Amino acid sequence: MCASETHTGSKALARMEVVEGDITRMAVDAIVNAANSSLLGGGGVDGAIHRAAGPELLAECRTLGGCPTGEARITGAYRLPATYVIHTVGPVWQGGDRGEAELLAACYHNSLEQARQKGVRTIAFPAISCGVYRYPVMEAARIAVREVREFLERHALPETVYLVCFGPEVCRAYRRALEEIQEGR
Ligand code: APR
Image (cartoon, rainbow, N blue to C red; front, side):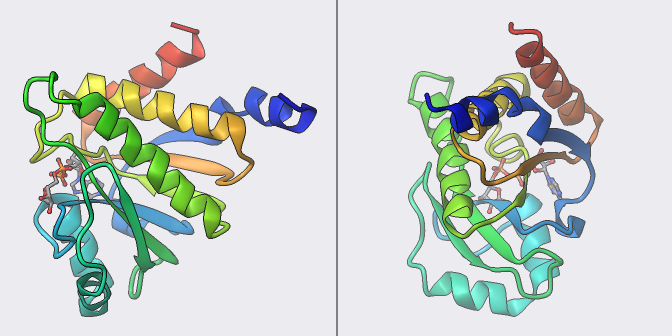
């Protein structure tokens, strides 16, 4: 590992923050959408993002031809305060032996890679798969925190990653997952 990477690595956790709130109001370079494979909108955070971005977001999504689970696609953000929306498709929880953990990890990695390639400095993630897709929240939070940290240890961009929780239960889980990794557990 070269010096600059080591330097970046030592600050990785300091570049991560758990926040509680509505991701559509985050004035960051990119917000991540927990979409479905059609990319044509839905409920939950997907619905909130499309409502706030306006119809141009759906129009651009229509040109993308969908997105497989675990992958990510980047679009404009239109009426949102962000510059980009990165749409990623989380796994539906099916008990844990259908590759869900690897697919969820891929959502974080691929979204961060899309952001890095666009020079994104600040990015906000919702709790991917923790709603309609019924992923156990504590497990999802551990995967999120681990994947984000690993990426930030290797790359200078994004500079800051916000893990945005929409409610106290998810917030507690993400804060606990971050504490665990900070304590080296
Ligand atoms: N800001 C931040 N987080 C939010 C917001 C919001 N405005 N609205 C909902 N959330 C949270 C939910 O509380 C949950 O913790 O986002 C997390 C993810 O839940 P979902 O939005 O249900 O996403 P997911 O579980 O990945 O299911 C995706 O749901 O909305 C549909 O089209 C979507 O089919 C796809 C599926």
